[in-house]
Image 1 (tube, rainbow, N blue to C red):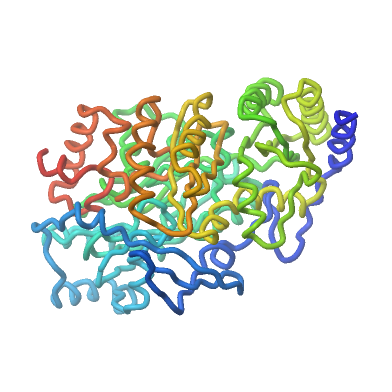
Image 2 (tube, rainbow, N blue to C red; image 1 turned 90 degrees about the vertical axis):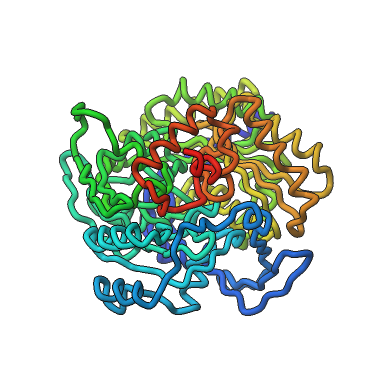
Length: 555
């Protein structure tokens, strides 16, 4: 009888999608896009107090006040010393920068600098006294040429939505913010190749392509603030990687400026080019440590008309794995997303985000999966998905499920998945780990962490199961050294033992720079250091990030 009820629910909620605009929000590729700056990153901090070494602000998000835990990591600062070879800013430096950028491009305002010095997680805070805002590549070149001659350290910055302290100063580095370089340079409708500047906000590119009948191959929760230059520099993954692959495949070319001001024009728009070394890949994922990306050419897929989304429940993690395998086999070319979250993740979202309801309220489930399909034949795709879901139900792989029937339900399902980081921030202190682990081992880490921490913390797991990417989050009332010592280095040792990666898509930044050896061999790290020394011999580009400073000083 339960199977028949589920069959009825799946069929009942599988009506055609209504893609009309509602509530002022834009509907793109099966999602309603709500401006990110207004709904996720707007953190105003009128008051702050300190508890056990962690500061607590009262932030306002969408008119609601809640406490936000901050902890500027003294442990990181104490182990990372400012490079004495770096110069300090002088009035002559300021005058030079004003000459090439004008007054507008040289920011010394304390309030603006406070935001630029602080990462989104409020864990890392620098003390830069200067932010530069170039508008063209030549200005970036002049800035870097001068800074290199003066041995002034710099940190490239885009939307500053990173989670590992990679986009903010560690000490007094000059911030080079490329947000003013935000022009779309060209788009070829035949090839689908977009060429744009690094400061273009991802959501703006998505909107532009939507009007052209195309989509970005990249989709992130931070789409309303993150910029394409930062996305490329961190090799951001996101929700569509299972369908479109990583940016190493989508980015056809780029322009980058080296530490000495040399402009590398690799802005090719060819699908095939085997003339020598493909150097663009050095800059994809190097987090601004080898050069500053200023322009990007990227291959964009055409927008397809048929989008379906299912929110499903599984009894155990093994069933989630079986469902993924069957989805790849049975849905094949139309599978565009496969996301999972556990019961703790759903609970934190329902508790801390307004306006969301449990899509499957009749009973409590241990795991949830979102499956999205995207194709060109609506009747065929829907029939294919429904057959797959009914077969999965009959075989016991899924225990409940519902298909989105309209734009509002689709938006609500995605809001649950994409709202987890926001909900965790509202819940209190959160330790975040972005890991690649063999899918069959992924949830073992979660269970071991729960056993290790007991009632001291709420261990929340979700991620891109189709990519083997686990987002492990440990939520607690506040940051404490005792809790931190139970989490690290255990989480890194466990990941290394199972031949995983300690950074799946967030990068290493400052947080994990000295932990790269958990994922890379000593020989590999030394080769990376040699490349860094070749391209940036004075080490002025994003210092203290990506590679351990001790390795760089020896190379």
